Length: 341
Ligand code: WQD
Image (cartoon, rainbow, N blue to C red; front, side, top):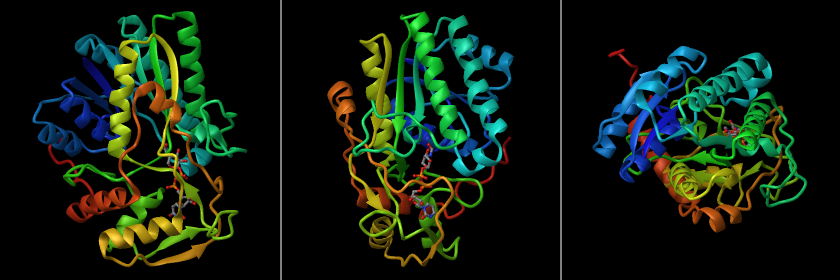
């Protein structure tokens, strides 16, 4: 298939592009480079041994989005582009609703007008909010606790209405748990701008000496060791999940929802221990107060994706930490700053 990948220069987008190129798809990337690097696209081409079309476009530029759709005429779209920092969304909700929701409306309108009706959307486990029961299944109550999660849920609902109006659409909503790790080569990985919001990149930057110490946000949670428990999933397993969802949509019209997780939760202290073992470095940390908006526990029931997509995660926490460490050690400052423009 010819695929348009929005946000394809980003962390999950770049890893998914490598997997899709290796599966024989042709790729065009649309990315505004606001939280990603042109170098990542170059490395995707290097890893896959295949050229990729690139369009530096902001989804809020409606005409530019339509121009890309007309030029590329894709068979389908994988939509990663969007802002994703929970804390930032609480401080700047309008930025999140405009960027994530309005940007997606521009994309969907262009798809509809150019008769592109296959979509894989990057949703998030954040739509579940603080669940009552575990593991979390796709039919769990949806109650996001922050504007970021609410933008993801709004976009899911927009897709539901779109498919109800025109059942010829083929839509996959993928609810990611906690993506971590990097491609085995260490050539692409997670390169957050500024101090990382997420646990793994922060730990990796402590290990490589970029950060002094990790703040553990609370050790008084109702969990086995008192620290937060999450379902971490290797970004390459997540990328494989997108390829599986595309194959599923080839045979299934309508809208389909799947969680992408491992079904296993790990605490912050367990992740620290695993990373120390993988890197051979000690991770200095201190216990800090809880972070606003955090929930104690979250992990997926991955059964529906296994049954319907024929997909399940295969990489364990040790591989996640070893691969994240290899990327960080080879790229201590992340991607080089773009000089070529
Ligand atoms: C994991 C655990 C923290 C940082 C968020 C988004 C979610 C998705 C993944 C986009 C928690 C603890 C963290 C630190 C810490 N993003 N922690 N010190 O919050 O589960 O999910 O990122 O889709 O939508 O909500 O991930 O990595 O921030 O936190 O102690 O410096 O690590 O309290 O228990 P989270 P996280």
